[in-house]
Amino acid sequence: MSPQIVSASPRALAQAAAVLSNGGLVAIPTETVYGLAANAFDARAVARIYEAKRRPFFDPLIVHIGSARDLGLVAASIPKVARRLIDELWPGPLTLVLPKAERLPSIVTSGLATVAVRFPSHPVALELIRRVEVPLAAPSANTFGRLSPTRAAHVADDLGDAVDLIVDGGSTKHGVESTIIDVSTDTPTILRHGAISAEVLRSLIGPVAERTHSTSQPEAPGQLSSHYAPRIPLHLVDGGAVVIGENDAYLAFSHHPEDGGWGLVEVLSPSGDLREAASRLFDVLHVLERSDVSAIYAELVPDEGIGRAINDRLRRAASGAPQE
Ligand code: TXA
Ligand code: MG
Image (cartoon, rainbow, N blue to C red; front, side):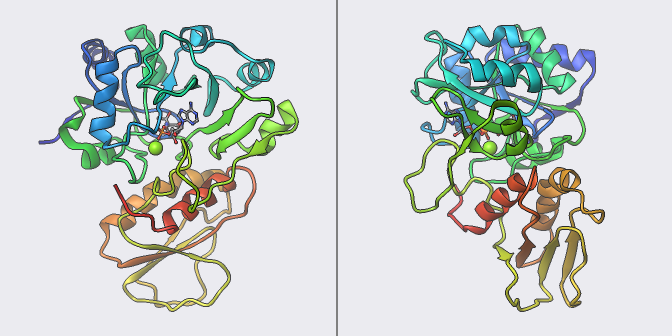
């Protein structure tokens, strides 16, 4: 059975708010990707998120607030660097890791002493949070280990009736997830590259460390290597020779490959615009997954700005970790 998809009208938002108030799960559009939301203060509802996503309980969720003033509901303290980022970049696709407020159920943070918080800019997400009058815990609305959804239909196809309601807000603007920065320690550290670039963060707060992703290290929050695995094998084309397969797809950044013979070619941004490429990335991967190609050969994009987030997702997809 498919869950109900409703377009974001005032009536639908009232319905969604009622579902959330009663401990239900609602998929909501944000400016990055769709989220699977529950009342962050309802531990049973939050447990249902993990079940619906088949996500391990040790992988914590992001809490979404509807105003910067509500930060005090979920975070115990706000370091000075965080203030600057909040003033400049919220609402928007930046998630801050801060010391957790005692009263937030520990299932939201997988027992960690920190909480990841985001103040989204999407009008539908904001309107809903404001109607429910509680922060919403919301990971990306996909099964653990699968592609993040950038359209309501992606959520319906993937999660089915594990979700009570899907609010359709069209396709998402950025197309990759928020940037996560840990500001709970002495040196602010980027835990996940995303829609806000490292360059922008450094211009605002100075030195910022980066936690590098490794497939051999024990898995830590934000670093699970199977996170963006598509259903068909993805290989990176890194300058080396590749064997062109007529059953294979080629995923290019801005130019069609010179060699013909690929079964399917997708160009992320013919004008070479990294923002456009990011906004189309998951959408194109969803399309390729549904096509009958047997493998995807993908180019990396320029490693700057939001291009870092794109390359990070492509590398993770190529790491071939087993899907959950
Ligand atoms: O753009 C986004 O951030 C989307 C939309 C829906 O807001 N959400 C999203 O959530 O991408 P999710 O659950 O797919 O990714 C959240 C990441 C996970 O990798 C998790 O490990 C990390 O945030 N995380 C959550 N709490 C954390 C914490 N206290 N410390 C470190 N990492 C944390
Ligand atoms: Mg996710």
